[in-house]
Length: 334
Image (tube, rainbow, N blue to C red; front, side, top):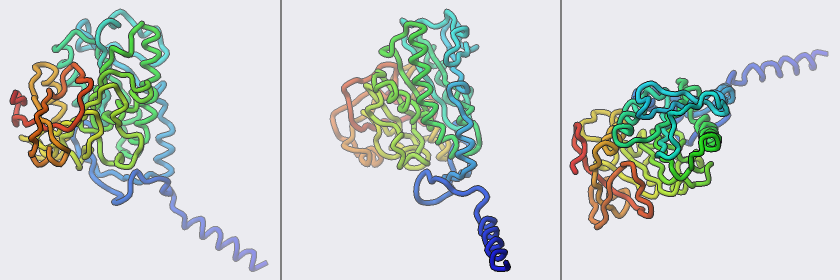
């Protein structure tokens, strides 16, 4: 009898020695902890190794019911019209399907009142008579756990694509009249949305898509996610993605440290201000580079040029570009 008791005791000891919340998945190899910026540029020390609890938290997020879509137009420029997938009662006459519809997707630990929404909504409505739909996926991205937010990025993107398909069927809008803009985690999510719409969105603009947790993820932004895809790199290799991802990749000021920015957090967000200005006033003429290293080193001697950002896609153009900016508004040098 004693040997049996000993086996039981040893078994219980082994169970008690197991970690309470075991590691289930790593976002990428290397260091487990690193600082990551939220959607307002605030740094947080994050764990890039996901536990069973992290996966359970991600599973509680249901983007089909948790995501809210806020419509802004020149008829309601400051008070949104909230919409949710499948609820016809929330649709009203503010939306005009004949006009360009711009989809905005924010980053981590913010909602539509973060840096992307507060800058891009008024800039877009000042620039043109458009529909702006700001995707609020705070239920999936609002927690302090970065691993969970990364895990929720793809399901949210799939759900946003489902919303657009439903919304178009209800309003008569056409996918040919859409423009997507995303920042940080949202910079990858706009690609996921476009991918799940068959790569047929005319223009997708990704603003400094996040680097931590995305360097080895096949779900990251891809140039085939839309008909024309443009990526802005403003903190490349740190908070933002280093290498080219789109048809056109632009590295303002070399893509790492922005003038007037004392920290990587500021540089990561600074491109949002550039793009907002590009909507209002144009400018930001960039020079073609042979590759992204030439853009970083300011060694761009190719004859091509294009305008960064703006409302219109540059369909058919590809390559790497660099543009230099002022440290303060107005940021464009021309």
